[in-house]
Length: 251
Image 1 (cartoon, rainbow, N blue to C red):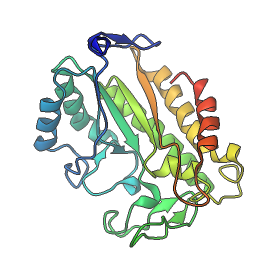
Image 2 (image 1 turned 30 degrees about the vertical axis):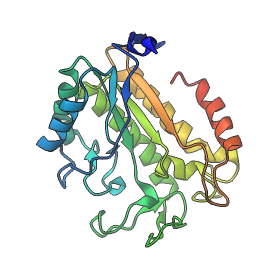
Image 3 (image 1 turned 60 degrees about the vertical axis):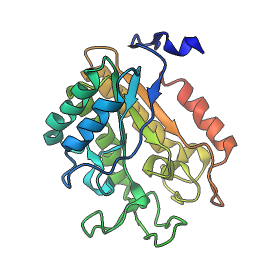
């Protein structure tokens, strides 16, 4: 067990002071515009002491991808706020990793200011009081891939040491991978390979942005929920194939 207190160096050269990492946990504490509150900064300042890295609560990459109190990385106006968060975590010699996401069909008109949630297909989640989302048009899917890239650039400019793509917990990236929420018949859905297209496109876009904008080694991670309860849903066999595809991406 003593090894957990030893430094760890990723293949890309980023070194953590130890192997203890704080998992991303939702705080629902940001302002309505997605900027950080003083409560959030105090929360991270207290909890980042003695850790190798902190993965933040998820930050939405587009305004139609938020939930109540979620942190925003949806515009350049958010960079000063995000920089405060990165600096706060760095005060404790801890690496700061920004988790980025889009809520997809798990959103609601109430938290999206009356806008209908969007997803891969117009299929409501199997949750009480869930709303049916609007299926994204093909050009909107392309815009979303770009939005994840833009969010990656903002994380770099704000001084973070890495990002984690939130491909789990039933949010949009997972929704494209899931046969329950993705019933598309274009290049973004259908077969298992096509359902992997959006997650892999987001990874590729993030990698491209890191190569272009990062001036030092930058961590790129991907969070996975390996199975779903829904029928049809993601199976462990599906996830193994996604992991195989991700293995060659340099995460």
